Amino acid sequence: MTFLPDDPELDSGLRPRWRPIGPQAAASAPPEPRPPMTEPPEPRPRQTQQPEPRPPETRPAETPPPGYPSPGAPLPGRDLRRLDAQGADRGPSQGQSPAAVATAPPARAEQSVRESSIPVPAYAPDALVAAADGRDRAAPGPAEGDQTASSASRRQRSDQRKKRRGAAVVGVIGEVLITLGVVLGLYVVWELVWTDVEANAEASDIRQQIVEDKEWIEPAPAAGGQYAPQHDPAVDPPPVDENPLAVPAFGEAWGILHVPRWGEGYQVPIVEGTHRVKILNKGLIGHYEGTQGPGEIGNFATSAHRTTYGKPYNKVADLQAADSLVVETAQYYFVYKVLPGERGRDCETNCGREIVYPSATRVIWPVPNEADGEPTQRIMTMTTCHPMFSAEQRYVIWGELAYWTDKSEGPLEELAGQG
Image (cartoon, rainbow, N blue to C red):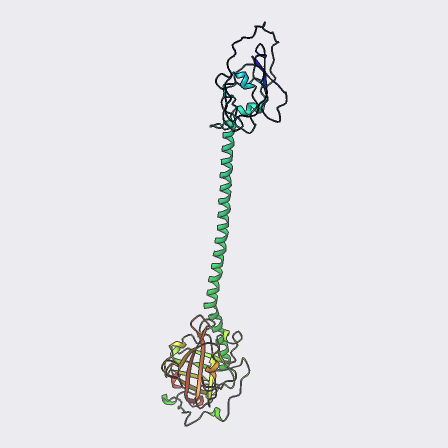
């Protein structure tokens, strides 16, 4: 028996209805359409009356279109199933003929197709064959396997590209960090080493200029090993009381500081002013403008770097009570002695040292730490940064004038070891 479609159109993609032709066409006429049932229909009773036999009809041989199998050829695996409206597999009920099942209403296109005992006709539409072929096959075909392998290869290449990009980014960051490290290392070398080299060279040139000045007097040689007499300022005031030293101009070098505890070769020029770039960064000792001069009553205040740029006051914390601080001018030596004690710990007045903040300008007043005090002592003040490699605080040293000498009377005993 051959089945032909009732309607050549596929009802908007749905499975077409089929009608049988041949001797049993009258007996298997499609029933009237009925509403979908939630329960399987009751089986029809078998027909007892057989139709009258008819002579067989002769039909010309059918030639299938190109690409279609021959009529009646089996299609393996392409069987149909029908689902009711609720998705239950109806299948051929007991006592129900295949023709009755074939004429039942078609299932929806989106519902999957399971196995049934009804074979797919030879000229079934492609949509129906595809549905019957089973789209959820367990094993992929060759084309699907190639597609899966291609997708895996693409993912692998994408992962490799991401890894290469990540490695490139890490490499760039590493190079930047290495460059920054080299730059910082060079900056540290420049700050801690090279600035000292440049500042010491410039300070040496300025000291040579001072010594070569026509007004600068070299100490007379010691007669019979005798040194210049020491004049007590309390008994024999220095000449600066009657003839004060002329106030130098800003940036003018007018003296040299000697500190025997820091070595025989310690000879640093003293310059008027405390400008950081123009004076202190050149390895020089700056004299606070407006404070008293060396040997005068009041406060002779100075400042210098503790680290870098020649670091003239690098060992200021090593000074001890009674250490000598020698200020050399064109004609005189003024010898100060470091005072004992630390202010705030074991003394309150006339102390030798203190650590303060930069805003504590009281340390350079005519009477240190006393705003309205009347100066009676000849004080020398040394200020520098504290702690090391920081400018957060100031380290202060105070000394008092012990004696003075005239360079024309002979060499100074404290500087006897200097060449």
